[in-house]
Length: 492
Image: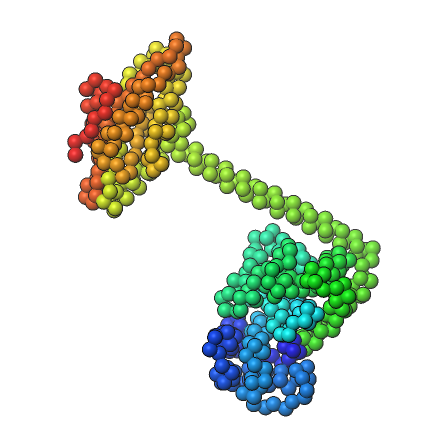
């Protein structure tokens, strides 16, 4: 059993995981993996080779043996067993020494032992694989500890079932998410990656390894703070969700403390005494219960604050979107304003030159608009601008842009349209405006508009925005002086 192997390999560098251990894991996953090659690789690192021999010779591995050759030891544990030893060593190298490391390793071993116990009760043969998977459930926290040991230990001291919520409140990446990414980076088996990612899921996952890890998380939680009575109930319910019995849950909880201490000894580490379930429940006196109730109230408040934070974040995003829209929109007509128009025209001119495609603009002016204001009043004049704006906004293609250019002038951008296409579009708009019955204080009346169309195409032809608008303005001037209510195309 990997949990009871002897002295671990000491870290040989600043690399997070033992390089030889990780290499063993990766090589053992290859379809063409062979024991002789893996034995040769294991023998290349004396410390790793000694560890394999120690595992095979340990009493928990089976009848007493006196293996002294690493190749013989590898042949006895097989590829899967060697992979499990490699993964366990790799993780043990990540755990720092000291009090913070003791807490982090204790939490990891608790999940590993719980996973192994549950796998045994489920009748699984390769229980060591479940131990190794459980050992990696907290790898996200162990990785964080290399950058912020006390911060990771602070999270590890929190009640297990609430850790993810506290991480989110602190703006940290959830340790299941970080751990799954790390497992993928280290090319660990897919079932290990999935178990790490899903061990804090709200409901039991589908895959067996993930489901066992999910239940192991809830067994381990009984030793890691919070409401002990509720945690015990949650642990039993999790075991029942695996299809096991309440007696199985009681047995696993009863055996877990002693096996965690034994597993720590196998890694040549000390995680301190592990209290029995009875001892934990006896400590739930009135003072502890009051503290727990206060903590649970704080948790509920934190959940409420997180919900408020998410809502405020969503509202802020919506407000920013609205502000961005307002900053680029003409308040009267709802069309793009001059600022948004200029940004779009610069963009579309660059695209036309790059892609060698046509770009057409249409400049429009409401005929005799001053007379509309003088005769019907400025409120009616504003309504005329709105009505004309609606025509421009509703009669164009999806990729076209209509903007209020200033006063009673409008400018349209028609990407992909040549001069003739622009004239056709302008004629359609001219007729639509001519047909509108504008509401006035003295009854409906008609207005008309004049249009100037200019186009560019391809590299070297695009010119500047100023040049293109000037050509459209010249055509519009010709339309005005040619009798108004007409479309004039600019000269190429």
